[in-house]
Image 1 (cartoon, rainbow, N blue to C red):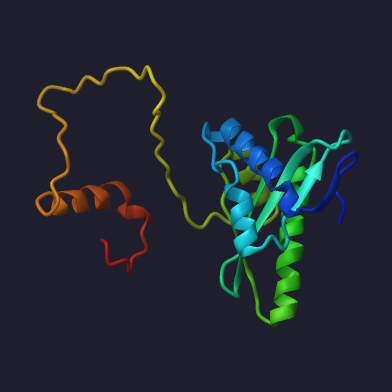
Image 2 (cartoon, helix red, strand yellow):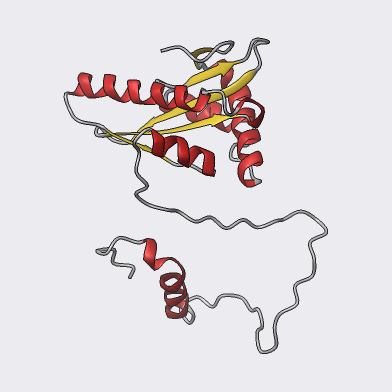
Length: 195
């Protein structure tokens, strides 16, 4: 399987960790306004867990344009994330990277003689549409909350009757649990004992 022209793909190596970490951070910053990897973090993770199945895609100038990160979750599932920089989207790179993840899962299934679940996470509407077109179904939805810690944040004005105080360990536990269930309980499986 080859990427669309003029792109080239190759297996990622430890030497690519810096470029791939920057690419992932740039793509996430474009999508959701945050970064994932601190400098050196991806390299440490790859050195510890391996990078079998990870791919880097470069453009005609040799500049990283997209990547595939693969993680084996036990013997029966493969988790992947594909990232494509905004300037290179809409050219088939996402579909190519997803195909590479599926090929990797098929190889693992043959080697282990077990069926494999292929799992991913997506953070943009275009990615969701591509996955749906390829036959993937939305199974779970995760929600994320981000806090801006940059200097110059606006001063918060609380509505009348609302005040902020520190959490009191042992005293506020039930209230915190009720709040978590009200906010996130619909996302938890029916048999989750947190309900």
